[in-house]
Length: 464
Image (tube, rainbow, N blue to C red):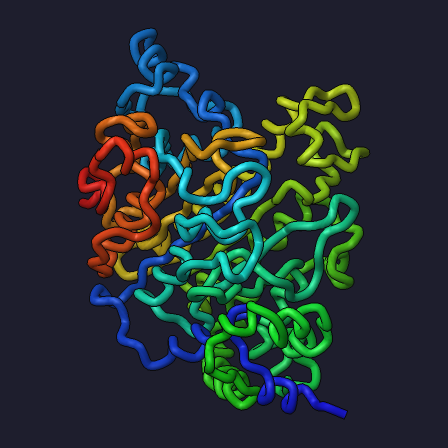
């Protein structure tokens, strides 16, 4: 019988594999010059983000007209009301930036973006061959190394139930390399905090290795056909995982002070937990992973079209299909638009919890939030069947973040017009501001290229 060790040593981990490399490259890297790393939280949402729902309800008549015509606009958030669904962030307006007008036409649009929305490329749906480069979260994780390098969480499913365990993720550590993610709070807890909860853990009970060994379809994909040609040549062994765990054990005291407590409802993967309960637990995991220093970059797919929504306030007894409400289906007499708003309200409550918890954690002369950015954005553009002409971003940025957009509502020039910016420009801005001088991250927009419009580089006005 083949053991897990045999399986790992005989299997080339790469294109189809769950990338483990960042785990091991992170140790020994130089700390940030300030002594404190910058942190980034990417929160992906499904069903698009309709720009009018992000607009300020207290615009002047002139500003409202400019916004609706998608003309450039900049408004100070002070003195303005936020849309209802954003009001959990009222106390944090000084750190809030609402960025309208970015396009994402070079990524996949429609129902799913897979890896492409964070890599700014066409991914050929979910094929490994279509993963063109490391996604932006992995690029930022390289700049601010940590024991886990990068952590991916997701609350996704198949209409009737959530995925559980360790499953294929949406981020990518390099060309043809799909990341893995933790699909339920208990699994994330077990794996991230095992240095405290199970310090003697070895490969025999490691969920990640169990996933690699037992997923037969996964093995078939990486062992035959065209995808095999795309595999990288490195082999990640159980000994490397044990080495990482040994180093994590030295952090056990610090981790123990901040370890989250999960309710019993999550013990079996949370199959009976409501959506708000799952989100609360996953937010606790995310916050603890940042505060303990296990990671500086988290990507959180808070829902996708197949995620079943249960226990939503106003529809507590319903099992809501996000896809169905995208096609204007109502539940329990509540119209689809109101359900969509209630889902977003729940999302913003989680964002507010992250901000408030990090603001309460001292760091240097300020707080951990001072060195943190949180980005909430649609995975598929501006609506349920997104075209990619717009991808609104809601951004929370601490005082030490090297970007200049907090406290403002900003609408950039519309797609394929002079001065327009893409998600590639936005990601280039993030990288340039934090130490990566790349000329341009991501693919170029074909319509912008056809019109010979300048589209390469960072958004200079945003770099402080």
